[in-house]
Image (cartoon, rainbow, N blue to C red; front, top):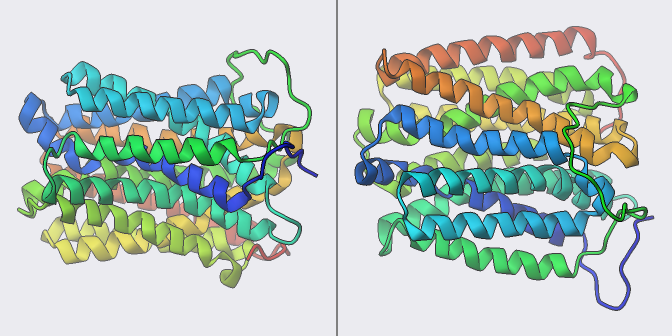
Length: 402
């Protein structure tokens, strides 16, 4: 049983999921604003992808250095630290200090996301009452994707229809962080045996032996799925504005929101699809989405782009929940935070390296051509993972995760 702090009322796994969503919302707020920053600061599309990649590298650095920190120090202290990084990032964006502050703000945002990924996921799952483990797993992954999707939607709406488009979204983020701090204060601590002075040290990718059988295909699935998310959050707004001539920032934010909303819906479908079939099915649906996204780039159709990202998001969400559920179930409690963090390392490598490649290629080729190359490569990877899972694990009996 989780250890519960006495002397104050506690908040359950849904409260922890809200904290998770608030933390992830702040990490994607700049997505529809990159065009405004590009006009104000005068940098290229390649620099947009570099700024985006700085965030992903911050996530990876934290996961590698402190991925199991919450296993030692406790979940609540790590959540407070993550919320502190979120607040500091928002303050840097509010100061509008040019490109250096943009880089620093994204780096701190990456630190926050890295801490949230392991600690918040474990917290939500560990606070689930008996019989609600599957719902808690859905709450954790939905909070992750839902928060990521609400960031661009909120920023796009505020930037398009409210004053101070480069300041108001981050003021709203600070207010939400305050709500997250209040909720975290009432969360019970679930780590019973905490280290007095846990040490930060490079831990690499440590995966317990009993998890390795499911980790490799799950990590590749996460790489492919998050590559699509990286395309949507770093490049899609520019394509929508420049190629499709749609300058409404709320539309751009809504398109990015749609892929994360679809991901959340896809996660909710795992119970119906079945845990054993969810990962390969999700990968093949992701392939279909990538093909549609590629087609939208080819014919320059916003409608087809929206359909493609929704289809791809459904596949990504279905496969993502199947992967993280299998890993969480296989990992021993004392290593769960670190194992989940290792999984997210693979995911965030998928969201960063391909995006940097896109940015570099835009220096030589037009954005549409680069997008077609990207969607083709990721579709091949996703198809390979899906077919492998169908062949190796499709007939293996596994408990339903609904």
